[in-house]
Length: 438
Image (cartoon, rainbow, N blue to C red; front, side):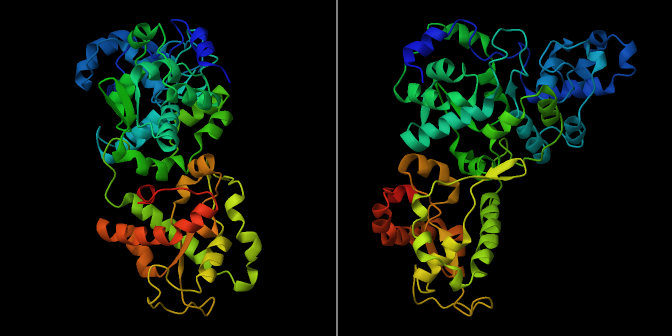
């Protein structure tokens, strides 16, 4: 790992992520693609002249056809020779992504879901092909920014980063392998590059973030994660889709072009505020599947000694389509319920029905620290959150209350469960505060 001095000395005036000079508004790029889609006999028409004569009809605020390069960047138009200068636009066509988006009006909820997906797919190297840094820039830019800011917030309590450090240490990276190095430079308040003003003038990446999605807040001289979207994005995207691994699989231009230009149905919206209950509904759906798995396990299948050591086993993600997830072992859940003698740990007096599978009172296993925090907790404490100490036996009513009750009631339940479990947490080195749990 390089020192800060070595990092700064490796930079020159061209090291920052570069984007085309045209307007980086996705909606304008979409309007340009709509115009392009309507051009008759593209092989026999002067596209530049056609664009200049018709751009106002489509609400485009720029008369030059070069905005079509932004349409290609966002996967709305094909680009032959993907990582190189392309032949004339007459040889290109609109993509499957465009065809799906064209069913909706700009700004509609469904349109914004697809727009979010395309912004998240932006990959350096595919964008620029005219600098010596092109081959080194092999990175999903928006996602890399999120990983950096989220790790700084989760592990080091740094909630916002000065733009001068952001330009210097983040927007000069070429791969996800530089993640740890970048975090070290920022948490130690590294110096800005002497090329900062040049970087500020040349790179339009911050404008892409400002104009197109609301995952980040860029206020004054700082950038941070927008708290309105953080939990939503973590649960419905980060924990489902491992873009670090996917990045490795999309090295070939043909594979990345196919990924960019065809809908992947990632299903997140970072433009409209998350719909009320969307995150809760996803959590409940997953919980119901897990609860059923736990209930189906017979007591005789439980190896208490082995399961009680789960906290020290390094968590491993498993592949699920293009996503990677941290699985929950239902036997750990059953061990926790058995250890609680099939009682509700919030209130032992709560009565529930008898399970048809086990003949015992029906209880549900709940992770006090969410499995979505698996990576962060392991990196900080070396503890696997899918452990008996972190799993609570709850009656169905209390379990639903944690997800659906009014905030004050949810807080009351969680506080009691935390206080009851805190000594067990400390025994395994899990020194989390009540405010973190809440």
